[in-house]
Amino acid sequence: MESLWPENLTVTGIKAPVIILREQASLLGDTTQNIIEAEVKRADVSPDMRLDKKNDMGFRYVFYIVAPALGNYQYKLFTIWHSVDLYPVIICPDQDVRDELYPDSHKDEIQTESENEFIEMLKAIFHSKKTGNIIQALVSQSTAP
Image (tube, rainbow, N blue to C red; front, side):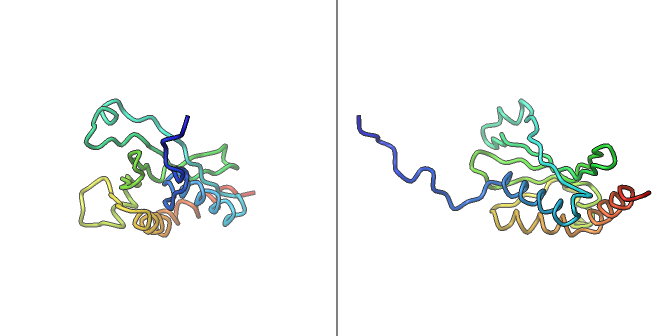
């Protein structure tokens, strides 16, 4: 039987948010010589979110900063949600990070509409003073004699 499917189904120019997160997690380990690492974990989506066909945010991931020398201590830096369409992505950062990036906003979530916006927001989160302080504190404790 002849296939009725198009030939280019596996070709995409868009990178999934989870792939970007995993790449950045790996790069943090490289940057700190694995004193500090990061981990991306898939999280359950509440039934309410799965049933909401309008928003269908069926994919949820949590980005943790991890200190292996401290018994694999984990600090949750942010959570993301997105639909099967990949973008937009909703980011719920650590409250202090959010307040640093958006001091006049009372919103808990940040919505990014595209891969580029998502990458720029991740850069802002990673470059925030709070994120730097967390990593420096964990490095200090991890390398203490």
